[in-house]
Length: 209
Image 1 (tube, rainbow, N blue to C red):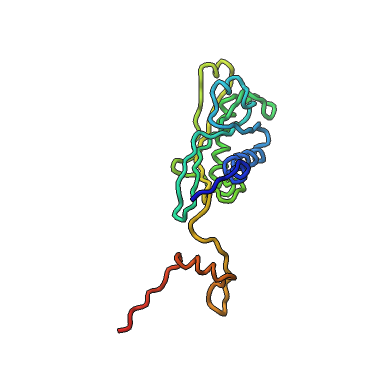
Image 2 (cartoon, rainbow, N blue to C red):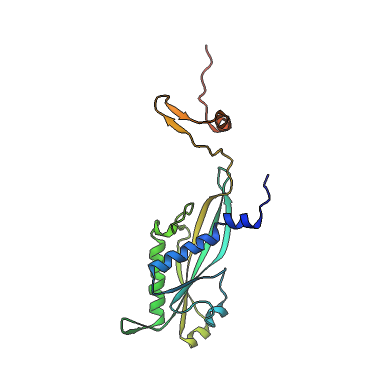
């Protein structure tokens, strides 16, 4: 039966906000010339058009959906659909003018490159799996008529990523020590062995004939 959790404990065990923070920190390190900020969810187009969210060239990292499921051991997982909103305008790079579409494609391609690197795309977090390949990460343009008049391009990169083994499992979580002489695992408390017993497969011996 689940026990009550005060707000402080909910914040302490929340996997999503720290993961968003870790993604942003990694993207800032790998893309020092971009403005990269957090967004609390799915961005509103009017916010982008008014330039109240992301300063170009930049990325606003939000999410569109979080799904849940359960592992066989009783833990649960969260699958988050992350959305990186790319905002670009024509910009001088290396002494020459680069158009907004070229910048958006370059930034989008860079995000896809990062997401394709499994080690980097776990954002230095434990319990986070590499981005899902079905569906794969995707770069798409996002346009409105007003966007074109303002000389701004909006693209999105979307991907799904799982935070695994959350909550409490049904299996006992004890740590034993392998004893080479005894040829087995030694636990410091015999009650731990009793708790593990239901989960340890037993070898069936045939009855004596």
